[in-house]
Length: 276
Figure 1 (spheres, rainbow, N blue to C red):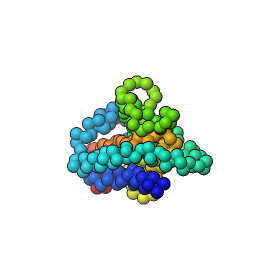
Figure 2 (figure 1 turned 90 degrees about the vertical axis):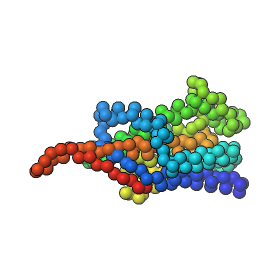
Figure 3 (figure 1 turned 180 degrees about the vertical axis):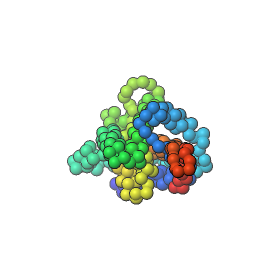
Figure 4 (figure 1 turned 30 degrees about the vertical axis):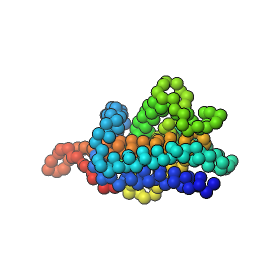
């Protein structure tokens, strides 16, 4: 049991170390005024393309981050069954309810997209563009992560822990179109981390919000292992992908707006350097 607890602790630290490592990079952030219009809808296609080609533009630190996450997941892969046993041997009715009602629906979009909708409405009523932008970018990150997640799921077709009478983390059936065996990667983890990274970036000046956003995302990811729906490696890969998508969508912006003064009229452009 002590050995299993060490694996559990290592797994928790891995998720958050991925976040910390990625945040150390110096990023040139282009901030764009976002509205729900044709340009916003078109950006889904351009941002999807940017996600696909982003590795071509990675710097040394980003490659180190990727290598660290990949290497960690290789180690966790060898421990997937032990991590799963730990969670399944420590289930309680109270934890079942917490997982089901407090965290599961953040990952499937029920809570997260409802929150984005309410945030957008609040932004409209209060005439606060920051809230509107956060809601629209969070929604875009969620949808984009779902697209990439399902492409990966159908490419690998890994068996879920509850797919077989005797769980086996090493069964992969490869590319096909059937809807079963879609454990890798965790869609709940990728979607909630994509939204969390957008919200945490948008409101990084309010220290509590990033902590809350990433705590919800982390616990949602962990709940997928607890619910016996995913292996630990599914969750880590999903969290890393979601985080990367959210950051890319948030950073790939430029704010251009008209201005007027007593002496002149024109267009102003703002570029921000985020040194996190």
